[in-house]
Length: 468
Image (cartoon, rainbow, N blue to C red; front, side, top):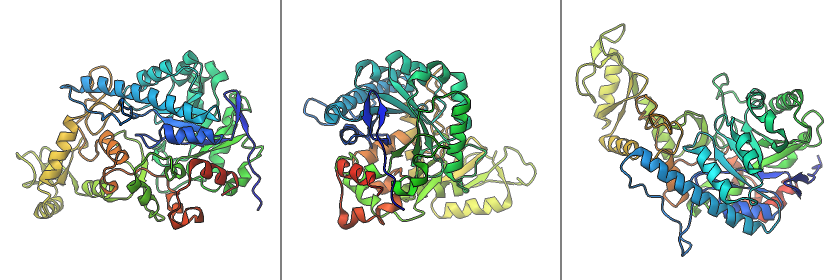
């Protein structure tokens, strides 16, 4: 079938290609990649999630947290985030050279999301065209957009989620709603919006879900000119021919998150880029280990496999003898108030014999068995929390009121700020969380990348526009 081709759309007062660069934090999408994407005529997206800032010599400023309390470290994190976001936007705008558009991306569940977003927009007036925002229900996004006169593009995974946002807030600022991003919760990389009613093992066809979203938008009176941005699983546009110029779906744009990682301008280290070329079908795992509590998709590398194995070394316990919990746990714990089943006692003794001699309590009345070394790392990472999320399951941090979720810190998770900062700045990819979309295996199959070819962003955008 011949590729229909794309037509430019009006966004921010100028014609742009309906191609959106997916914003990826921490520091996996920065000024270099987003500026180049805009220069190629698309909508570049600076990640405003703890973005890098630079010293007088142009070197990245390390984000170091020496303050004594979590609250003080959280306040420092907000300062880093604003300074970094402002610097990235200014540099991206310069690279774009008046072409395309520059958006910024924030996660509503990141710590201090509102002050960070407001701080960046206050210092970049006239440079940012719009704000994309997901990972939560960002009701206040429209209000902030109106205050700074920028467009907003909420990220949702269902028509129901959009309807809730529209009814509560967005209908009041409808003129700045530039697009609605539909992020496929089974295929998109990073955090996504899979609900408790949806089965992570049973992906659904995105077409009826997007058709439902458009029907919901029409019912609520959203102008037909507002496009839906399809995000997650998009590789060759020719595979989406039926979506283009489709009356049922209305105007459609496309977001690319994974493909821009492997470009000359992409800021991720070479080790990460090389690893992308080796991914095979099934190597990307939809999991729920993130301290946000959301599902997310990442490569099944040793870091993720270790988390999976840790949760498998888990048994429930009672504080008193009850039901099937008739024996006392005698490995990994101190005290006698750990009653388990005889079968689980045997499993625990087996794990202890393998070196997993320390049991850590979880918020769900279970214990997980880890090595003493892992225990030290987990406890240190929890103690060093700098408040990067609004609610963190791993450290029990909360970014408001009394600054605690009131729940036991969960050793089955990890410090997401630490690992994303490390992988983005050159630490071994095997030892860190490596976010990727489920189509990442196509790097190894797409002839465009043969002979280890790495395109510029302009070459990638031109290629995409051909349908490939």
